[in-house]
Amino acid sequence: MLLEISDLHIEFASEDRTIRAVEGVSLSLDRGQVLGLVGESGCGKSASCMSIPRLLPSPPARIPQGKILFDGVDLLTTPIENLRKIRGDKIGIIFQDPMTALSPLHRIGKQLQEVIRLHRNVTLAESRKLALEWLDRVGIPDPTSKINAYPHELSGGMQQRVVIAMALILEPDLIIADEPTTALDVTIQAQVLRLMRDLHRKDSALLLITHDMGVVSQMATHIAVMYAGQIVETAEAEEFFRSPQHPYSQALLRALPSSATRGQPLESIPGNVPSAGNFPPGCRFHNRCNAVMDKCKKCAPQLQEISPDHCVRCLLYDK
Ligand SMILES: Nc1ncnc2c1ncn2[C@@H]1O[C@H](COP(=O)(O)OP(=O)(O)O)[C@@H](O)[C@H]1O
Ligand SMILES: [Mg+2]
Image 1 (cartoon, rainbow, N blue to C red):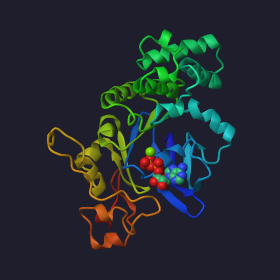
Image 2: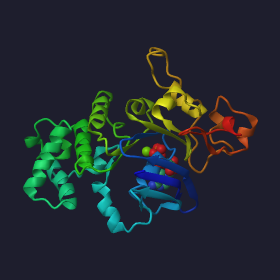
Image 3: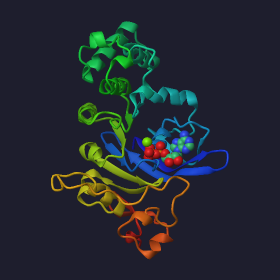
Image 4: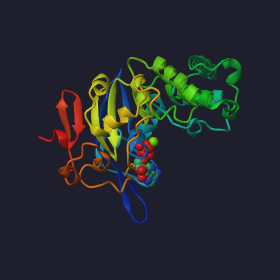
């Protein structure tokens, strides 16, 4: 397994209290796979994923428990110098807002070349050649002139293409993409997704974070659904879409436009997402669940394997 996260807990400490944002997340991801991590905003997707390259600001973030094994190395305990080598080289990151990754002050070519030269022993000319090649691969028209552009001279979609080039240019083993298309116009979203799908190498793994079931349905080989700081369902994508088991997953899928429901209003999940620190007792989803039972208000379900590679956290499956 390339990436194995086990029993990860993340807390955010403020002056007067500590919020447990992520509790007991376990995920695994291998080369060739695309893991779609789905869930509504605030459930802990970004915190979980940004803890992999240790990019959570600490303080306030703290990881009291858990293990993150990447290619056999525990990223939570490895020395920071080792981690700097791994970031960019072995793990590429694509953020939601391209301007998180790009500096407004430098030409995009210079920024790409810096990434290359930080990790590879190449000449300026060689790094320029590679930067041009990747600008072309991510679909930037006329790379020889665009390589001298500043980020603000490009559209949001073009900026995100540059960020994708920057994340992929060293051919990392793991790519973490946190809502990579959310900030883009709807028409551009589809193009950028297609680009990511085309560029995904068989020997690399993609962790794709999104609140959009439509996006994962087009890309993912495996699905993990998060709710209120926990994983509530994991399965292979095909199995998940054929037979989702958690009432929350089912509700998310009903909210997805399909040819059968086209033209009808989308179903949205009633109630509000509970915020970290205010999770309800028992099953955290019970107050929004259409299959709620009395015991759900008191007992917290465990994640259980209900068939090979299909796990669900729901009292409907409590043995
Ligand atoms: N820097 C931070 N400081 C304090 N709390 C945070 C911080 N980042 C995230 N959180 C808390 O963690 C929860 C999960 O956030 P996040 O992982 O960003 O959710 P998602 O990516 O699923 O929308 C948030 O509801 C918030 O309470
Ligand atoms: Mg997020």
